[in-house]
Image (tube, rainbow over all chains, first blue to last red; front, side, top):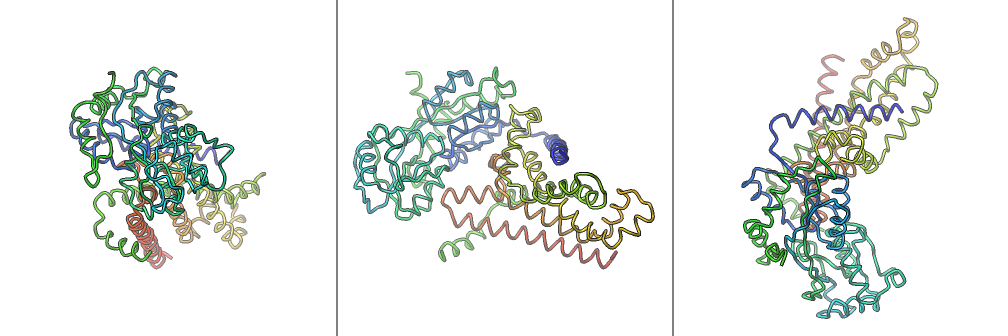
Length: 277
Length: 231
């Protein structure tokens, strides 16, 4: 009990400390819960300074998997969520945690694998590729973290007619981590993996891995943005949060997203103008 | 491997202001947490050493066990407490440096208390008898003994600093690794590792080690100087 009391005391003191710090006029700021793919691809580092220059609002990004990001927002720990799992986003809106969802941008998933391609999936469609992977029992790394990419991977198995629960074995490695660590694992094991193109393009430790399947319409990966409903959590910074969302979908924000390139290749494609059509 | 190492040292020279800001934040958070740890841990540890009360042995066992408190558990519990939906959500501390200080202070306090208890108990084995014969109260005896072992307590502070600055589990969960705001050396190293930029991650690791060495060297100098002047 004594320890607990001390814990609370430390907290109180730290609270005093934290309260003392913002006293020197902190700029307005919002917390955005987003995904590891947007953070680790470097997109935020590119666009957030532009937004801050224009509005003076500082955007603090907490990068989590899509599922975790939505959970943090449900608890009221974020003002805005920017994620990529349409079904989970619609559920979030249906539960009343957000009033609306807006399209922001999209990129696509790619199936990565060893250059030697033992399962022979190069150039195949997504369905065929995943069926072959299960048949060959080729080493495959799964995010396993309820992220948008993980959801997309599970959908791909289902559509390929693979019953993961029955067929997964030693070849299927569930790492329960973000896109980067999962790619590191795949690189070390020379395994196949489903990745978002943005993280793959900015990923440096590729080893023998390369893109084997791309361009299938099923690999489309849209990102949506939502303001957390202030009726659920009164602490939500509505004005600043809405300003960020408005900027993201404005021509200026959309151009900033389109201009983010690695090696001349764009990572995300703006899609706000297509919203509502 | 050798290629990565070569790159690491090449990149050490190109580390920019961002890295200095991150290192400074790490240092500030961990030193504040250690300060709080000393503030709570030294009185607690020394009182446990000199006072006799029921349940004392159990408390000692708990203190010793809590030296090994898993940071990620501390982070998770604090996260639930500090979350807007948690009991302390009104403080608005989650995802701020204040939350990271609190988490590391919770880690540092039992470590300081357990180490203090040990050195004070050892000192009491020599000085306890005469002190008790002076009919001093437990807090007064504790105070005298703390003064007696003050140089040994530097080690407790350094151990707590080492634990605080090197942990990642707690700061990642309660801080959120926000760029320019709650990104510390350890969370930055983890992030670069995740991005597959191993040479940059290693370069940051070298900086972190340098930071730890500097603080320890400063403490050793201070201690040596103080021991000569006031020992």
